[in-house]
Image (cartoon, rainbow, N blue to C red; front, side, top):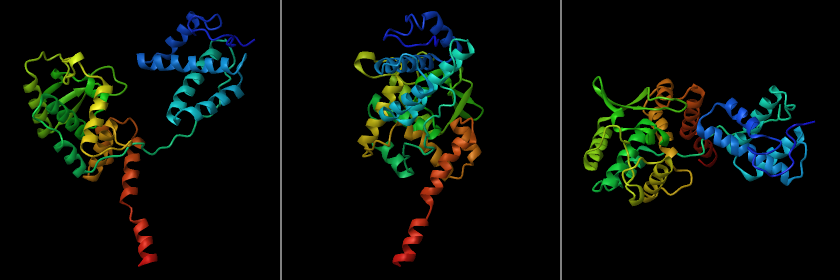
Length: 312
């Protein structure tokens, strides 16, 4: 008998079928960050609720495929892949524990596009974005510094959020900002800060006033949480609003577009693929090559050459 049979829509952690002890053992197996555990928990709960809604008493491989197809209709491919991965990992673990067969084994993930879903800014557009920010206010100085930092270093919003004042240090003959990279547990890596960007950071910190070195590099200016560390959501919102104010109102332009801009500008200005990969903190050079491929495609004269041959 399949011990993971779905019988009712109870909370997974208190279900008589999936006990809190059993679910806890699986979470320990996952060994992810708090965010990962939360995502996997939500994914498993959604799968079982879907099974209940569809009167599935004993899930089979066909049911896993049907669930994948259901997700495909409701969510983006990346979300489908994430949720399906959680289910596959859960059943792989359950089989190892002798609880049930791995019915999710060999169920294929949805095909994901390797093309970027966000656009990048040209040099003139970056200048236009920065010049549109009024630096006469504390908020303006902060937003200018954030965008200048992100667009020149490729830092992610979460890396910006984690940065403290003390992470800004003199290293040899340049200023560096130490940061906690993706998948890291400490601030062991650094970004070289260009003089113009450092000036913007110092201008903001001076206007902000005396602060403890352990405080966040960037803080909120909203009334409800002024002076507190910013969130990734607030930084994303700020960048989006600044983009719109500068005349760049597009769904494909977001805070993550600044990271794409960093990569594209690096390659356009002769920085090698290897250096660009190191700058972005990519573990695999193939990831960086996606930017190179997109850039080569954008610079291609194939269409215009064909049109000239046909129309003269």
